[in-house]
Image (cartoon, rainbow, N blue to C red; front, top):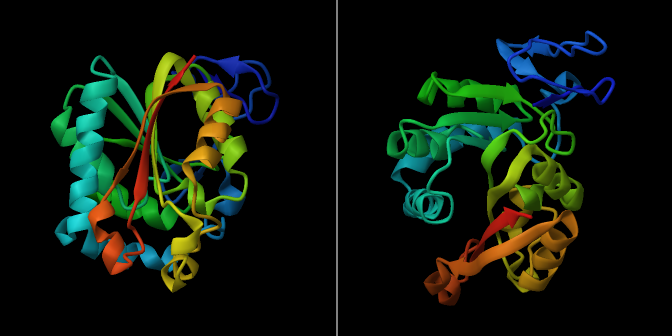
Length: 243
């Protein structure tokens, strides 16, 4: 189901607009836009970075390894999933890998910046991409799984985003997250990347619990880079289920 951001009513996802009040989402540069006022300046990131990311991701060991881990986790924790939403999909690198691994799944990607969506649609035009503010997700009981990969640390209202993700999931749906870990690893890279925080396990566990999730698995990855003071050392994975 979709959730009308004007009146709050739920209506069928196949309908173009709200059946209660008639409101319809706008279009921005060819994409359905649920938060058009933020499409070019939503904060939390710099739209100028997308071009660099698009040229970097496919050849960079960290992005490639993270993609393999995410694809494995989907098969391990939600093997029967048929619909997936990525929040903060950026240039679409993660979704393009998922779509190749799971060709029968309906994939959706959201990004607050239309600049990122242009790259994402170029990678995989068959995916449904939309412009959206993750603090106000226009869906309820809609997706089998939702992912946010190195996104929450950019958003001040991370608890609100988690609650919105919970509502957008179907009952027993699964959320997959990756975030940077350990505040003491803060560096200029975090400043450059527009991070708001690095997480401790306890902090994110508490926020997931407050949003209603049951944690299925919480683990670190790329931890061998810790000795080299990598900005991504000890990143965390969280695989959680809607209760």
